[in-house]
Length: 245
Image 1 (cartoon, rainbow, N blue to C red):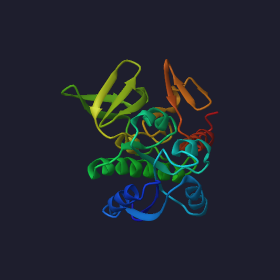
Image 2 (cartoon, one colour):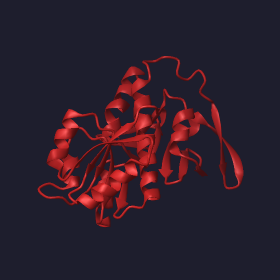
Image 3 (cartoon, one colour):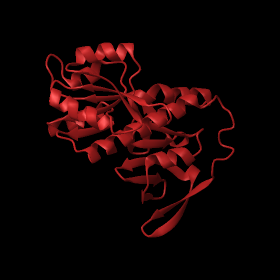
Image 4 (cartoon, rainbow, N blue to C red):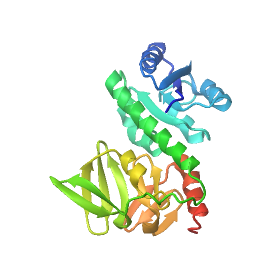
């Protein structure tokens, strides 16, 4: 990624903004763009500039960070940075990339930023995939993974979906689940692009395995997987251009 990613900090505490700003300036892939103390000012910046990463506090005057995410139509890759852990679940339901507790150490902040960069690369790739070009010519028919001290061969068309478990991923097939130490983005790179799609920061699905879609939820057997707001439009575009409806 040659172009730096633009970052916006939103926090009503100046020392907190200064700390995150110093972290941003120490990561070559990032560019500090702006900071503000409330979400109303943040909305103006988001409406006027293409922000890649939003670093957002939760408890702020007038309108909280979570309430802001519920109503905004333009949500960049969002990392919540707050002193209150009880909002973590609600944050993840709003498609945030990560949730950091104040004061966030640099190494933890860097891991969150790495997730955001991974998500942005994924989104950019899915946007640029041409309509029904031969995108599977070089795609493998099977993959090998290391699981339970064994090297396991898995046919791609037998994979139902893959979900992230922090540093690990769990591969679901009709017969078995496999856990391996690998980034979800690695599977996104190598799996056939015309029927595997990353519907959320934490899951990739095999389009052929989907039983039904209701609202923002994909059903594969007894499993329910959320489609993130950021990926929903791309997901249905992918289905449409491959004439899967």
